[in-house]
Image 1 (cartoon, protein in one colour):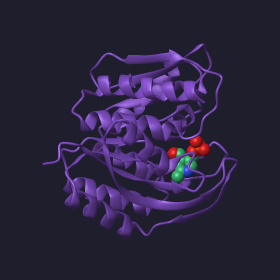
Image 2 (cartoon, protein in one colour):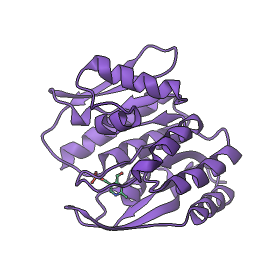
Image 3 (cartoon, helix red, strand yellow):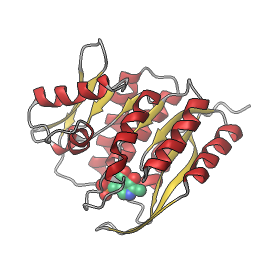
Length: 247
Ligand code: PLP
């Protein structure tokens, strides 16, 4: 008998270990969750930049997901870098065949160093994936691309952009405030027909890579244990804040 939940991570590798699947697995381990993986892209990276990207063939991504789902009782799925529209379509097919599993989508578009991690033409395909996901976790620049708007500079425009994602099928949008200013890093949760919620932690001066991967994986880990969404987000946010304090 195995009572430890499994999370399936669908994401890219980062040779530096600063982001991607290494961060995901570290995070899941910290939450006492087992990881299964479907690698979407192999990237050659240092902490300064992305030198090369090999996208894994879309069919192979889907095969990895199906194998992981048949090998283990997957209690949540975390999706990170998807690289191409074709991979998004392959992932969508597997998700459609496996309804009922919570899915956290970190819409990875561009690295902090400026390298494109999702083909710009694939943005529309990514929006089509929203209906299959429990939660989308964009930062402010990602939100603006997904909402086809300028980067939001006021709480009102953040809300407008997030609600535009709800209108195209997102079930919940957590906008990460890491790219904003202020003494607190405030993440905002938007859901249809529900009061908006905020999750704040003191903003620390430290810089750390892979925070988006960590937050989404931590949320997936807590969802795998059966936490309600807001409780999972609160725990995940506290975890990432703790990692900042360690840097
Ligand atoms: N590489 C991979 C495989 C990623 O998934 C991500 C982000 O999710 C990045 C690089 C970018 O990370 P950062 O912006 O922290 O450098």
